[in-house]
Length: 120
Image 1 (cartoon, rainbow, N blue to C red):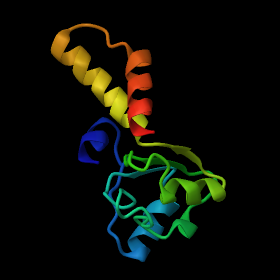
Image 2 (image 1 turned 30 degrees about the vertical axis):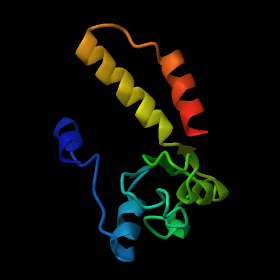
Image 3 (image 1 turned 180 degrees about the vertical axis):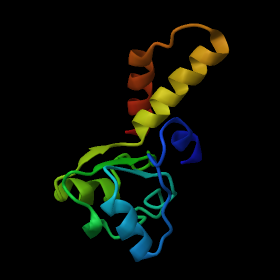
């Protein structure tokens, strides 16, 4: 959050797990990113907060990629939110790392195919 706020003031906040903190953070947010282990196997029935606090205008990204489609994402979609699954962070983080370390352009088409096959 502090790194993002260095570029643009108050663009990002972190939230505590208490419902009032989450409620306040969501009231002032459009993007919600789960970067916790909540919802990750074997705890696939967990969500990091009460998803009923989400609004249809929220964009919900989950960094968890096993399972690929978490309970958080399923509940967010049911409420009309747009979502992004965690494997995309894995793929693009890998592409950035590949390019950084090799100086060569990553073949994201092949990387995507391999990651999606590996996770299925």
